[in-house]
Amino acid sequence: MDKPKVVLGVSGGIAAYKACELLRRLTESGHDVRVVPTASALHFVGAATWSALSGNPVSTEVWDDVHEVPHVRIGQHADLVVVAPATADTLAKAAHGLADDLLTNTLLTARCPVVFAPAMHTEMWEHPATQENVATLRRRGAVVIEPAVGRLTGVDTGKGRLPEPAEIFEVCRRVLARGVAEPDLKGRHVVVSAGGTREPLDPVRFLGNRSSGKQGYALARTAAARGARVTLIAANTGLPDPAGVDVLQVGTAVQLREAVLKAAADADAVVMAAAVADFRPATYAAGKIKKKDDQEPEPIVLVRNPDILAEISTDRARPGQVIVGFAAETDDVLANGRKKLARKGCDLLVVNEVGERKTFGSEENEAVVLGADGSETPVPHGPKEALAEIVWDLVTRRLG
Ligand code: CTP
Image (cartoon, rainbow, N blue to C red; front, side):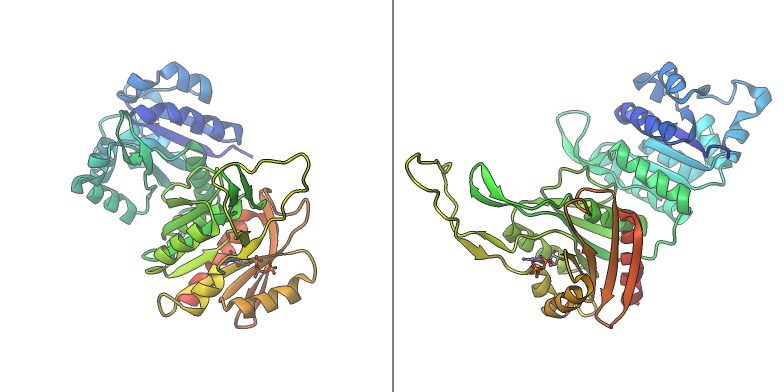
């Protein structure tokens, strides 16, 4: 089978160097990548780098190899065009159909899905001109990833950072596999919690759990791809922020509760994928707890943490809000799941069997989604993203 053909457009921003990693990920996963930089991009990363990493010729202008009509052919033959970084200037040209170099010509001739990963200073991103250009491109079906928030070129920080190459790669992989999906969560705000809470005993120790956060991140990523505004509340995950998602970091169950309640106030759906500690140490020692050679250790006294899922299910922030819980069970998985669904009062409960080697930290999952209406949706063993898609299918059906 032919390798999928990807055009990687690179425009002139400092983040151009990060596109090298995206290029590597694309080539290593079996894509034939043609890099089309703009002339300004070559100020940041030279043509030799793009050519060596892609194994393909590189040009910026339509005047090279004219007999091959590159300005038409490259776009026509592509399965995906991804522009990363996309500067304000490139977005403007694409929105207005200007075609003064090879990349902009390619954007006009491409009939395949197009992904833009913008990167620029916050002021440029927020400018109404850029915002209108982005809206135009999205209306025409392009995927424009929201920039990340963080350190920009200089000392300043804000919205406008290029999302991590791994995240842009995930978006490309999904768009190549499924095309530009119907944005059935467009206009919706969804909240996802992920990871595992840590309950501190002293400044260096905590009670925690083995949740990696990968399932929650897959939920956030897929919801963003389906058009939702996503708030991801991440507890101790250490994973890169998914592209186009608002990420709030928390540590403990009490902090998680506060963040979830606040974000849920205007949310259409809340998915509690985080593993929340049911108990926390009753006291926190301000200094490190020392061992005493001649004494047995003190027992750790625990107190209950609030049950966030039960609380938001009983006391819904909005009528019609859909609430999804997760349950990790080791035995009697379905019977325990049904009881938990009733006890928590949520609409859907994703039940998975856990064990030493199952689920935690892995890329895959297998589950049954139980509905408060008595429904049972088995999800076969597969990527956490596939489970995430099924959860959003069930949520959208309930949102009506
Ligand atoms: N959860 C929560 N707040 C807690 C504990 C759990 O919101 N204090 C949520 C989790 O995010 C998950 C669901 O509840 O969505 C199930 O968590 P689990 O710990 O399995 O449920 P428990 O009621 O604690 O049941 P068990 O007795 O099995 O621990």
